[in-house]
Length: 176
Image 1: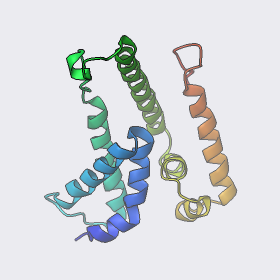
Image 2: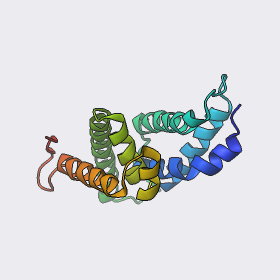
Image 3: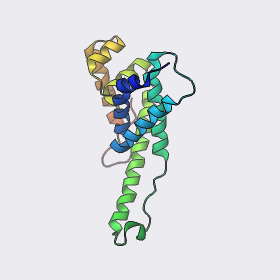
Image 4: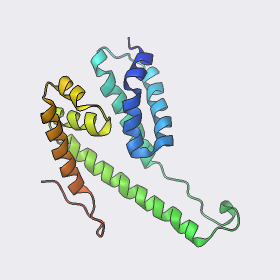
């Protein structure tokens, strides 16, 4: 049987950091709470203690995907905006919606690319860049040296940066 209060103490910060990078601070807090609520109410308990972290991140990821897919309820007319809304305000809502959609597509491309990596390399990057764990801790967990962890994280960041769309164009570069 899993002790979820100690799991929260151990993994809550990393789960929240993962969600915050993709959804923002307020949504991340709600999604993190929902992650642990779902884990707590799961019908089957986890058998292996070492799978708790992966289980929590899978729940968090699924909740995040569902959250990002949910259509936003944008204010549509003048009366909903309080009577004196300028057209620029309405355009701002559309622009933010488009930026969020672009960010979602980019996050999906990055996630898809990360899934093509060998398990240890993907875990190394996830622990360093997404969870913000110290290199020494990652090296110890993976059985690597700290310089190797730094090199792997640097190389993957470099590849992922190339996936970002250029400022003037809408398309990114595929990693080699």
